Image (cartoon, rainbow, N blue to C red; front, side, top):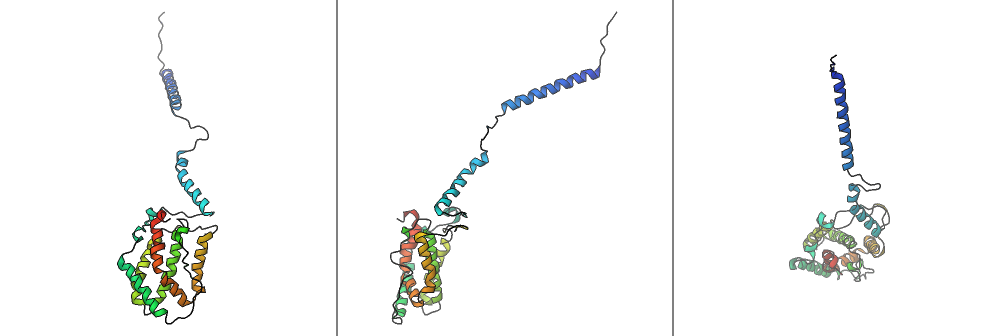
Length: 238
C-alpha cells in the first residue's frame, strides 16, 4: 500500500509564522543585552550641564545675602568697556579745570556762607569697596554730579560746562553695563556702600544749593583721576 504525504498549506504557513516570531524575540533580547542600562540614581546629562549655572547662582546669593537675584551676563559680554577712561586726554582734563576755575571766580566772592558736611569726603576711595560695589558707588556719584551740573547749565557757566557734561554723560552711559542688578527681594547694600549711597541720595535735600554746587565742582578732578580710574582698572585698583 503506497502512502502519500498530503500537503497542507495552512499548517506550513503556521509553522513559518511561529519560526518568524521566535527569531524576532531572539533579536529583541539581543538588543536589550547590548543596550547599557542607567544605574539607579544616575543623573541625566541635562542636569550635569546645569551644575555650573547653579554654582554661579549659589555664589552670588551667598555673597549678596539676597533671597532672589536677577543675574546679568559678565561685563565683557554686555559691553562693559571702561578701560578707555583710565586717563582722559589733556584737552578733556583742561575743560574740567576751566569749568572749576570759572565757578570758583564766580562763586567765592558772592557766597560767604561756610558749608558744613561734604557729599564727597576726601577720605572716600572706591578701593575701600569690593570690586562689584565700585560701579554702583560711581554710578550714584556720577548721577548726582550730572544732576547738579545740569541745573547750572543755564547760568553764566553754561559754555564752560558743555564739554564736562558731554564727557561725564558718556562715562555714565558706558557705566550702566557694568553696574550689577540690584536684588529684587531681600536686603539692600549694607556697610560702607550703603552709607555712601545714602549720603549721596540725601545731599540735594540737606545741602545748601551753593554748597552742593561747590562740592560737585571741586570734586570733578578727583572724580576723574581717582574714582573713574579705579572702576576702569577693575581688579588692579588696590
